[in-house]
Amino acid sequence: MEKIRRNRADTTQRIVNALEDVLAEQGLEGARINQIAEKAGISKVLIYRYFGGLDGLMEYYVRMGRMFPHFTPAMLDQIRPIHQDDLAKVWYRQAIQMFRYMRTSKAAREVLKANVVENDPTADVISKAQDDELQRLVNQLSFIEGPDSQAISAVMLGALSYLTIQAQNNHTMVGIDLRSEQGWQRIEGAVKLIYLALNKMAIDTQSVKLSAQAKAQPASQW
Image 1: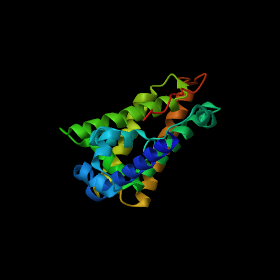
Image 2 (image 1 turned 120 degrees about the horizontal axis):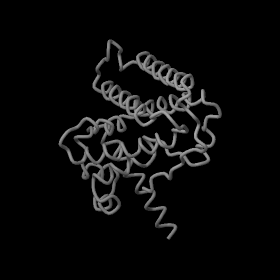
Image 3 (image 1 turned 90 degrees about the horizontal axis):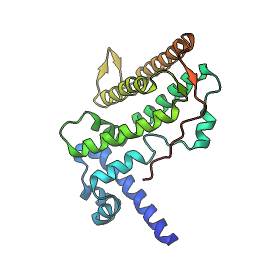
Image 4 (image 1 turned 45 degrees about the horizontal axis):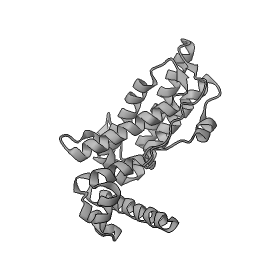
């Protein structure tokens, strides 16, 4: 039984690696089961058996923790802010780190593009999985009572998602070159400044209170 589990885990990893290669080479629109199976060196029947098809494989990739981190209760305790004015650091550090990964992974950027694709069933599955993961992450990292952290995160993470997609399309935004490291240093500086300002405003108006405990939620069972 243990050998079967190891074999399945190894095959799953080969499939995921092949998916990333195909996404990087062909883009989201060009990803096909046959190509993924060929690159992984397996029968496509295994992809259907393990994931049910391309949609299930894409959903697994989104939920596996590579794009959106999974925090255990112990990890949440480690990053939990001690003081109210530490909250901004948790938020901007996690947002910046998450989108740095997406900018370095062409496969992740291709998956991110599903959020702006219309009338495509696979893109809808991917987009829904991404939104579920972001909701989970925001709930885990709220640590507060009072402000609408969900709406704040929708604005900030939505903006970073759009800018990351624009960077992949070799576009600029308000004259900032999103293809350059200098441009992204400016964006990251702005993200940090916004979160710090929001944190200060919430403290000054006494509208923020650290919750009694971290909102730990189980990671995806994929």
